[in-house]
Amino acid sequence: MRVPVLDSRKKPLMPTTSAKARILIKTGKAKPYWNKLGIFCIILTREVEPDNQQIAVGIDPGSSFEGWSVVGTKTTILNGMSEAPTYIKKAVEVRRTMRRARRHRNLRRREARFDNRLRNKASLPPSTLARWNAKLRILNQLLKVLPISDVIVEDVQAKSKNNCKKWNLCFSPIEAGKNWFYNQIRNLGLKLHLKQGYETKTLREKFNLKKSSQKSKQTFASHAVDAWVLAADVVGAIKPTCLELIYWTPIRLHRRQLHRFEPTTGGLRSSYGGTRSMGLTRGTLVKHIKYGLTYIGGTLKNRVSLHSVKTGKRVTQGAKIQDCRILTRISWRGYAPPMTKVMGFRYPLRPREVS
Image (cartoon, rainbow, N blue to C red):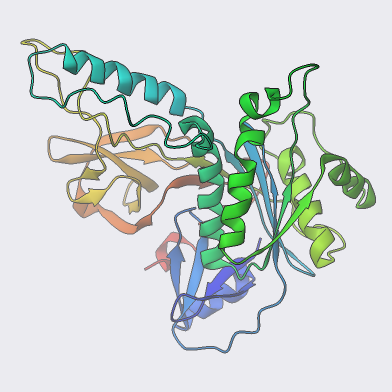
């Protein structure tokens, strides 16, 4: 995969190879940088005239997983696979249960409101809006580090049942929110291309590529292959020059639930959730002297917990802030699956060179 390059004002330029990025950092002509997707970039220390070429991003939307591929005319810049947020419905139900429980306790509270539901009939449900908003956030992060001009999306259409015309709109989260997503892309000033499912299959046969039937498998052939053929058809690429993949999982922050649902001894509910830990934003990518690249979670007795970027599991609860070097704030856990060789935020440099 290529390394994104930003100028001194953080405007995206054409990406470069990891070898050139390493040389630029060693000679002091560039500085390392990570974006919220965990993608490693370099920022040039001097002004450079942009010489950008056509770059397109292909998107293969899905209800559980999405495929991403950023393709130039000659090289494959980046392949990705992301998880769709599926916890929204349960979170809304928990929030509603806690709100109703507060109203039955003798506490200061606001009165129930019933005249603020359904702002308009075109409003999307929270779970559907979260799925499409996650795609839009990933696209925005790619636009910040790559000079993308075209977006190609597979126009997914659910099959209708007989004598049930509105079944598509009510059932499929992909069908319900796609028009909202398309309008957001147009508002960004990008050129939008839509392809049907049968056209994607035809393009796979044209480029002699096969798609895996195991859609949850973290490989190029699961979802990224469809995204690649969509983008390659627009920019005129011949074959994928890179089959490596970055797998993105959203980092979940509990912003609304401020205490535990079940009370402890004495009827007190311990604090829970929030977005700050000892002055740092939760989800901040840090480099610990012992645990390496991790991100910050909660706090316990003036110590912070660190979580693995790959699995999201907590590796320690007793880390000191002084032992962590802050890199950037991330919103997704991005890592390369075992079958690939390159991590999106680690491949150019050895740890001692990132300083």
